[in-house]
Image (cartoon, rainbow over all chains, first blue to last red; front, side):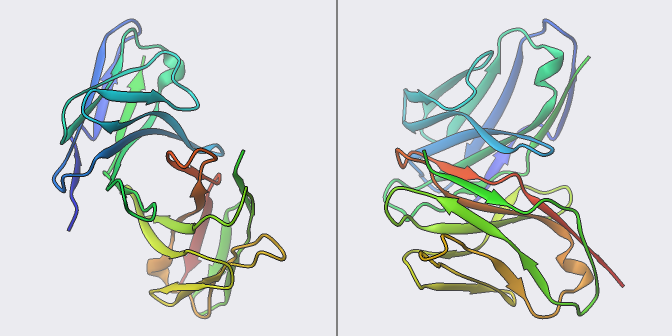
Length: 113
Length: 112
């Protein structure tokens, strides 16, 4: 089975702190994604990566950056956390030639005080 | 761009009731369509999918038919169980086929 692991299930940070959310997948997938989930808004794409060191902005990239130095790992970075970034963050991966199915991690719930 | 609209929740049903969660889409061409489910405290997992018009996806007693005439992909189950309580998301590839675009989610609560 595909395993997507997010390093932290729950985080509490203060405004202005730098936050790292880590995601690792074990199926050699080329594509990896970061989504944000908020009630009533569904999932919104922040960034995705189609290969190592390759990234592309999603629909809501402002305030975020990403890093993909190794194929299995995709990190989401909040350079200076703000209270409006309090949310559930979901990482996903997909094989490049698949029909589109994404495999998700369990999510990281971030609270910014 | 491609988008999906699904019915708002929560949907509250008694055990063994019939379930329908509506999903309509706007898309260029005929992309694959998906239903994902999120159980409490977990990430999303694929429930079913359909890759072309008139296809029916099915899994765990759930079904959805890809209907291009009505641009719909409604999720149905004949007899829900308490364990089906979750949030259900309809999804399709975004316009550039980069990622999936999701609906806002429909929370289902099944009471014993």
